[in-house]
Length: 96
Image 1 (cartoon, rainbow, N blue to C red):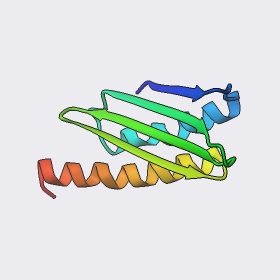
Image 2 (cartoon, rainbow, N blue to C red):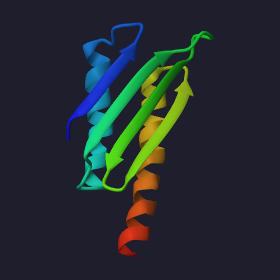
Image 3 (spheres, rainbow, N blue to C red):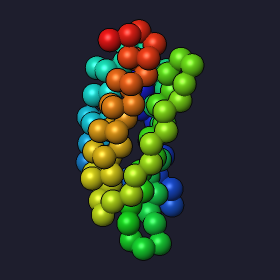
Image 4 (cartoon, rainbow, N blue to C red):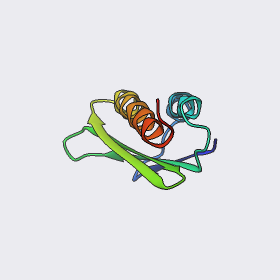
């Protein structure tokens, strides 16, 4: 699964990019047909960090946005919510 990371108005360091690849990459364990994965990192005016994850799967796009004190915390929150969403979608489509 290829993960496209975009940082708005700043350059993300390699440590952060590796962290995002590791955490967001785990989503492929929950759903095999992930078409695309986009992560947008934004600095908020109040010094908070915002992360928006868009997961493209056939028939749907799951978009989760979270704000936290660090990008890492926001990524972990997004991935946790996204795992729950993927499980719900799979249960709807394929049954339990």
